[in-house]
Length: 288
Ligand code: PAF
Image 1: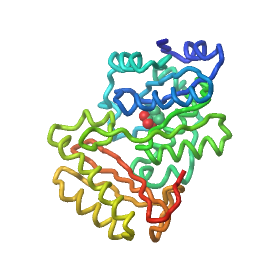
Image 2: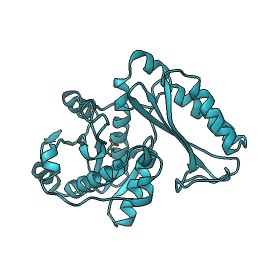
Image 3: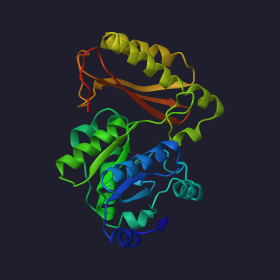
Image 4: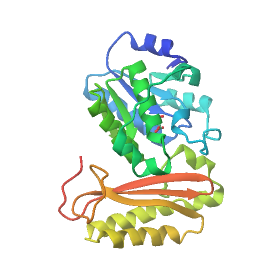
């Protein structure tokens, strides 16, 4: 596996041509990330082959001033070993100075989608994501890029950006990978105390229940109340937001008539966890 530590090395690796699929990450890799790599590989196989590159870059511009940039887990040696085992062809490990040159003035912002939901809890977050993903796309010039469905709003923002700006990159959505007890895999899980880790699967239990209720015809307020009741019963869970939105557009809904996405943001100690589930009322078509 080729290790590219700056833009120049990355561009040299890219230059022979052929198809390339990118897996953008912030490192501290787990099975969820490796499933993105496997997905990227499968996509390349359907296209006649190519190379997979994973980027590892803890992007400072997507963290707010009181967020966990300094404590975000970093484990470069282990990440490289995992990517080698997963059969990744290259890893891009740029420094902050390499990505953000002094005096840079340009940002990319997907306006409406970035300001709702998580964008209200984390102002500027999606502008940082859209800007760095654009830069990664410009440096790597991938044919496709894989993103996890766990970060549902991020995926929506990236899809909108790619469509709006005519970026020639196919976006590959990848289902959430869960621990045996249902907790969605996330690099932040390693910052949970043992008690918080034991409490966190309540998110998946609440989503399971809400999904069943929607399938059986429950309305918005009953579903929301059930989510609040189940998560609220866990003393270590501090609910930051519970939203039920149109699964295709993320817009607000007055009633559940089409597929919805249930979005949770819940703190355990100082760790903010998110999780999501698409739920289909009886007879509703699929969202994709
Ligand atoms: O999902 C992430 O890990 C990050 O938001 C991403 C897409 C790598 C951009 O920094």
